[in-house]
Length: 363
Image 1 (cartoon, rainbow, N blue to C red):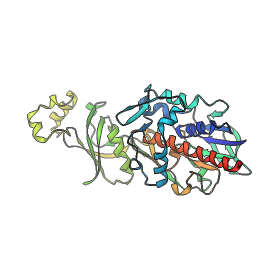
Image 2 (spheres, rainbow, N blue to C red):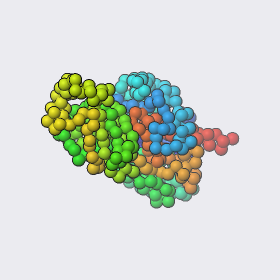
Image 3 (cartoon, helix red, strand yellow):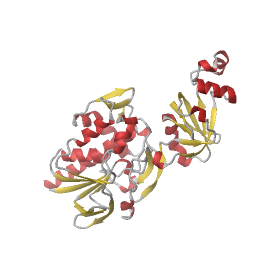
Image 4 (cartoon, rainbow, N blue to C red):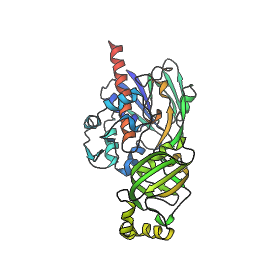
């Protein structure tokens, strides 16, 4: 019986584990470096866990790879969780567990782990190719016929400290991790608005050059801006030299409407007072971006294992038997369930290829 070692007990690793375990053909070893498995799943969607999106398309990701397009398109999130006895529901285009609790997702992923060795606080330091793969960890040495790298990225305080150091030692090309989907620090800060959420359009410019715009919730903070549409725009910052955010807080009204309606009838009293005192224009509030809140506050990261390093099964070309899935790959998407969808989809994709290869081998 083959031994499969899965490094990482997050969304992609646990998806892979479940598909492999359904066959009862493998000894499965899951090594998780943090204190608890599925910590980022629990925090996802403010505890509600937005697992996918009805409007699923490659355009919401940082790649145009046909392979990634195939993986996200072929994956059926409803079938996957139905097999785990978890019912889903929709709110607009967003897909959640029916309970609206991320704990339901974690429990569904872990409840069929009987017979699986799940070792937490176990950090893989090095991987050596011998007759099997030798995994050197802070808790000893383990051996496996196949290895699945599902370590994620260093995004958020809930992630582990290491990322892909073991693969870098093996000369696998990895792009540096850079924060994505992250809150923005701005030169203009209005602390009186801290915690206030408004609906509007946020436009990102590189100095005077328009980059993109997003419509949705904007959150004022004591360091700058947050909210879903702000975090969506933050994905561009790694190639924008002079980022500036322009906010339209009245996207459904024209300038002439502002002359007719009182500001205190259009806005929260804190915002109305600020606009009046500072003589600010609600349809064009300008914020000069001078940084982000950093990788430990980000939801996901750009970077990871280069897609050129893997074949159609997400197996490393240089190391047959080692696979990479989830955020450990250089694939990241928008807010709205896209990153969890890819994590579940890629973990499932790897598992099915491992099972297919075992079937061919047995034949």
